[in-house]
Length: 299
Image (cartoon, rainbow, N blue to C red; front, side):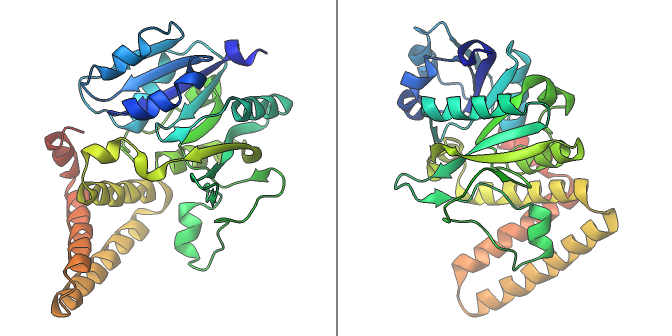
């Protein structure tokens, strides 16, 4: 297989023109589909000269999962590389992922690179499932440890995935109930249920500009906090029994109420506000009003 003919890079973006520009030298060498979740026309001006880059514009922000599914549906290659707008690409690492996949493509479900910050400090790239973290608070993390050899993981961070398109489609793509956050955990869970491997390949290195994600330019931190908490409950709903979920939510609610009260007494207003947001998230999730709120926020 030829990487330039059999691989499509799928990018979901929201006003990420500057970040797309940084990757343009790499993007123009591959087949690329970009799904723009904004109404800006700037990205069209950047990509128009390149016939290999297909731009799909949305009239509203569809969220990461739904937009990615649309991009994959327009793809005609055997392999897809999901790439977040806050990833700095390099050609050799893409080739490294692709060649590794071909060695054992019948058993591999998802491949991901090792992630680094701009100072080349290694970031944690998943490896431990959200459910396991909840069950064992003392579970170890890789953090900045240098990986030795390829590692089978419970999950990988969704900012960079290499998969077979047919396998991605067979899983049903990303669950569109997740607007943002936890759609990667959920996809990895379904991958493992199919008996496929999830592997981090340290020879492939990408820089992850984690705090530069374009969506953060639109949503303030309090909105992101609410979305994250709601997505965590949607994820738990799919993975634990209903009674366990409701017990978790009830305990969370009581805990956050206590913290809010104590922090108000101690005049720790910043922490109080965070706990208030968590309480709002629980109320929005339980009442299902979060779907209405998302529409009001145009997400």
